[in-house]
Image 1 (cartoon, rainbow, N blue to C red):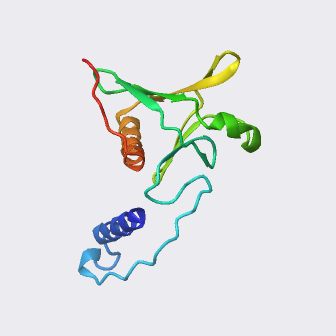
Image 2: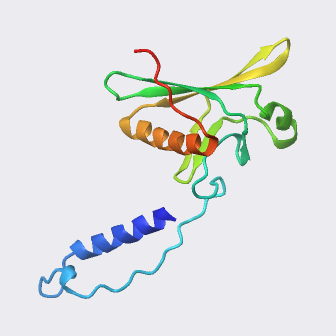
Image 3: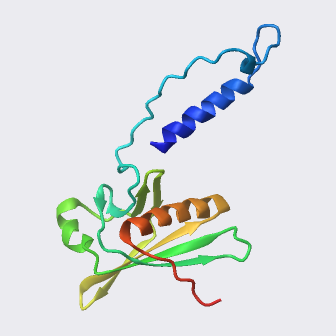
Length: 164
């Protein structure tokens, strides 16, 4: 996985910059011992590398592709994403798998979560789910965009810029 390669490279660079306790010789001048692979802890809510999915119930991917609307402040310091699912399959499956506890955006970096989820009913039946994900920093915006790139690639989606 690319995360292991990055960690291994980072640890080698860190070791090379440390000073030796022996006569002030930089560690770079000494031969570096090979680093052992370290197994990162595995969390049960992650899916395989290179996969991105939206889930209302942890571990149950939602196959319905939503409409996504993005807004961002002029300064870029915060923004929001509104997901609109029209007749999602979770309505049929939720009685068997559990309750909707939020929207989980799962990819190989981890999980983004929002609990701001609302259902709209038409003629007494659930028809639409809206979920709002708020981003309060540039870091959160960049992380969300990386998730959306993976999700778009996995589902054949594109980006269409709205009117300014």
